[in-house]
Amino acid sequence: MFRYLTAGESHGPQLTAIIEGVPAGLTLTEEQINIDLARRQCGYGRGGRMLIEKDQVEILSGVRWGKTIGSPITLCVRNRDWENWHEKMSPHERFQDEKIRVTRSRPGHADLPGAMKYDHHDVRNILERSSARETAVRVAVGAVAKALLSQFGIEVCGFVAELGGIKASRPALPIAALKDMAAKSELFTYDRSVEDEMKRLIDRVRDEGDTVGGVVEVSAAGVPPGLGSHVQWDRKLDARLAMAVMSIQAFKGVEVGIGFQAAANTGSKVHDEIFYDSARIVRGEQSGFYRKSNNAGGIEGGMTNGEEIIIRAAMKPIPTLYKPLRSVDIVSKEPYEATVERSDVCAVPAASVVAEAVVAIELADAFMVKFGGDSIAEMERNYQGYLDYLRSF
Ligand code: EPS
Image 1 (tube, rainbow, N blue to C red):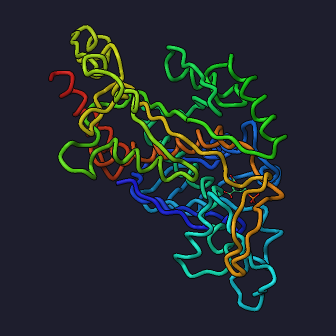
Image 2: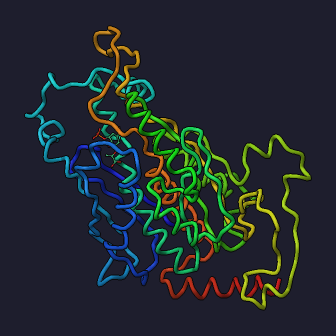
Image 3: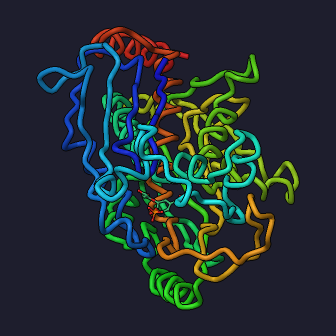
């Protein structure tokens, strides 16, 4: 099992993750994790905080001389903004200051339900942890999952598929080519033709003091058939992926393959017909079975079917707005209009990197469940045995 927890507040000293279950012998460096941390910080539409933060990971346990040793891995990403928050976020009672309490709850945030649930009369106690700042360390965990998956030829990549209703169209290219295109795009999309329109929309929305959301897409290629299971609800891989993606701050919907479109079509148009060609095995493919379409998004009955996994998810517009929204002060009960001094206009490109991370984490977990060993060498033996069997199936 690949499992993890994160801890840390947005303006606290650092974000921390502990990962358990990574086998020994995996090459892992801070530099390789930092590449994904930097990707998450880019993207058109971010606000002032990203000028302060330059996220870098520190590996504090579980790795020795560039390789995992099988023990829990601790990752830490320090918050540079902590400089400005020492007293306001101090664990020590002597810094308590009622004057800096936040009592105004912003619509669309965790503020009000969180304050009610935890009996807080200072919304900061909720917003610090509900903040999407936490995704920085989840991306670091995702980079570890991706390192594990890439040992077995599995590649995962996130893209922006839609922004404020502007749809990108996906070229019929292998994932590596799409990844290159997205890496060169400020919007992290594989469709250059809509990029300017998306940027213009972000500029217009910024001028209006508003925010905009979108749809991210994550693809995983090279995934063998048979990850996940049909036998129990919590072993179904699509269910696990949906939960992981829905757990990203500001996400409101998830679909696998054609998702909601399937509901509007008849069965004969939706289901991917099955073919067999023994020449595929000679060419080194994992199986002779294949599909000519992939409406299922690579998952049938809660299990991978050997086709590319495609997950799409909707991110709502960030609720922290310059434009006033009506709300109520939780202490005085007086109405007020919620506004901010600092906010992102659009974080959909960054969210595509986060979605990529959480999908990679679930796939790494499912992969460990099926082929898990205590070392990479043991997993390679397990995996090779399965591939040999699959080719003869
Ligand atoms: C966030 C609010 C902003 C974002 C932050 C998420 O932070 P601040 O309130 O400090 O300006 O910049 O995102 C990040 C810090 C990040 O690393 O992505 C929120 O309320 O969710």
